Image (cartoon, rainbow, N blue to C red; front, side, top):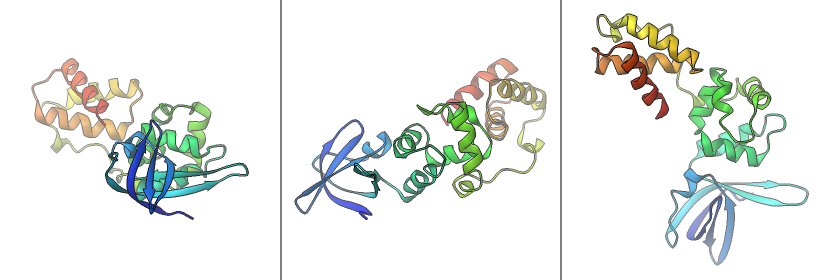
Length: 203
C-alpha cells in the first residue's frame, strides 16, 4: 500500500495532481482544499490511500490524517464509494461532516453533490457512533444566560426560533447568536438575525 508521497509537484488539475518521486510520477485524486496546498515545481508531501477495484487502481491524496480517516469512514456507509467520499470533503471538512451527523442535520449533508435525503439519512444512521471524535463536544443545556447581555434574552429567543425555522442546527445557533449579541447588544431582532445568518454562512 502506498501510504504517502514526497517529491516535486509536476501537475495540478481540477481534481488531481502528480507528484514525482525518484523519477516516477504518481497521479492522485484530491479535494480542492488539498490541491490548493500544492505548488507546481515545489516539493510537497501528501498522505495517500490506494483504492483497488477489479478494473482499476486509484490513488487518493490528503494533507492530513484526519481527512484520510474520514475518507475511509465515509466509505463504510452502504452505497457510498470513494468518489462520493471525495465529493463530501470537497464541500465539508471532517469536523463539519461529523457535526452534521451528530446533530442529524441532513440538510447540511445534502449540500454534497450526489447526496439526497435518503443517502444523508443513511450517513447519519451508519456514522453516528463512528465520527464523534471529529466533532466538538456538545454543550450541556442551552447557552447560559450569563453569556448574553442584559435585556438580550428576548431578541436571542426570537432569532433562535427564526433560524430553527430555516433549518439550522440548534447547537450551532446558540453559540452564534450569543456571540453576535455579546458584540452588539443593542441590535433588534431583524438586524441580529441578519448578523447571525452572516456568521453561520462563514462556518
